[in-house]
Length: 405
Image 1 (spheres, rainbow, N blue to C red):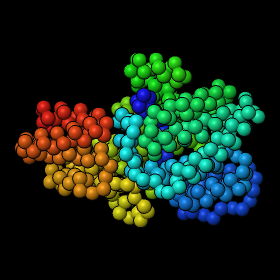
Image 2 (tube, helix red, strand yellow):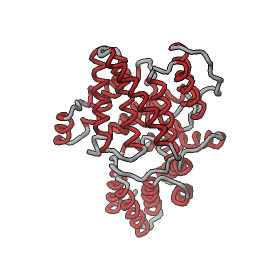
Image 3 (cartoon, rainbow, N blue to C red):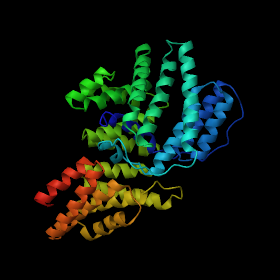
Image 4 (cartoon, rainbow, N blue to C red):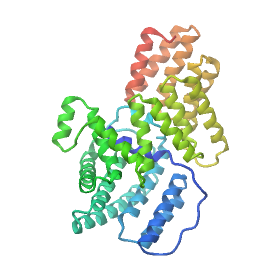
């Protein structure tokens, strides 16, 4: 069942790489739906700017301006969730391309975080359900309910680390957004959730696809991807989210040129988002383009050095790992070894340490130290297996047999 939830996890990457826009501005004290909509838009800009507290203030002002609109409550919860993920260090597509674990260790949350998150999301659900009961054929009512359940699902999986328990809420999100699309086929924003789940189901084994169909999830890889692409092309509050989601899917499909195209478009739109350069470098690495990967990472590291804003958990290690891996590909072994040792010595998510050992094994192979290389690969295999990083584990096993050339 954990692999069914992979589609749920992909939703998060879209909101992790927040663009950095203009400096925060003061919020208005006007009231009414129009003022609330403007405040929500402003809050989204601030959230994309990593200004979480200012974003929360804007969303809370939107609640004051229009307390019966569920979206602002959901956005308060979403901003808290995004910040929690950032603090836990989930910042690139690599965090979502592997097999999901049903129970994983997480960085501790601030006291009262869970209570505040659920209070806001529960209020969003209550208002959305009321709206749906009054207007059962309103596409937006179905969208609001589905959006709230989608956030609840991703919170369970990515913050609490409980993938299987989010199955019921994921099905509700899928059903509500599918209904919104049926009522209004032009609601391509609803297509993001539907397309994502359809794509996710298509990646399962035949027995699991059958099970997913029996409990209400439709499949179809091409149809699912097309819905996500339509959401990415459709002006809406989730358009940027859909674009980030495409980065994950295109990487999984090994469509690296398409992934890099989307990343470069986002770099033009959001030039202060340093994490986009991290994403460009990691994507180029998967494509075996070591020169491009190194240049992207070095550009991003320069941006990081000039950026005084908070870092994600283990962010420095991310930059060092991808830079070191690119240097390995270029056979610049001494420089690569320095970067990779910093990954092991510093603060980092555990699966990254496994990959660092794998790259250090390549360094040893290139230096002709086969015994040291095998030791590194075995260490990598153990960590990657424990972290359910199957691609790393498979590569380490192959390198134990054949070595790196």
